[in-house]
Length: 291
Image 1 (cartoon, one colour):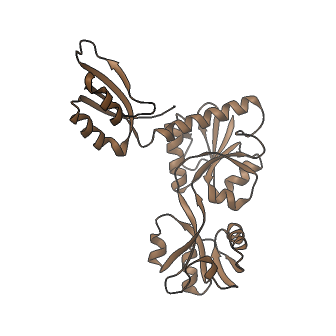
Image 2 (tube, one colour; image 1 turned 30 degrees about the vertical axis):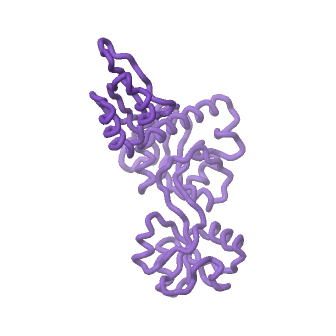
């Protein structure tokens, strides 16, 4: 069994479980408070704090893990990113009070106090910017620090920026971009060890997850179109490698075309095909997509 460390709570936990389920790896727990669960035939899930997952993977307590890249970078543990899971997107940002005159990092006065739950990333960022600051580690709610006089500047995770605005803060710089990642132990290319069986299993898992991620936001479209309009249809339906064209039994001058289309383009694509005389259109969701 290969052990995968998954977040035990929060949005990362929910999205991780949903992704693995879509890939055919349902999390089967024995109870609501279970610390581990079956994850298909080859994997076992263990549920731990997201911030502890880089440590578990680096130390070998877990073969793989899912956590935010911000937490991986802050941990400074020797792990390797195997796949960007494309959820949990956010950024670690430098923010200051609205009323101050600071417009960029270079404007921050030397000796300013910076409150953050990411002291290592913050220290590296300001050192690289050649700005001397005093780091004030906090366990959460960094945005309140300037109002309490604890700090002059904060470095905190930002998604939409609404929390900063509500608290009278604004961004002046981005420390790093983050999203959920599948990680493995460092020192090996794309697998937790050099063992061939382990490498094959991990590559299979990465491919399964990647096929689900690739399918998100895509739709499979089928339509009957006039054969004489195929040249123009190919411009409307580029697909992955162009549309698939299939002869219809007793279809006369009609042929069937199949293509993968971005969900955001479906409305326009259907209208363009109708203008070319298309009929019998069918749009379905895609569970997995392997190019």
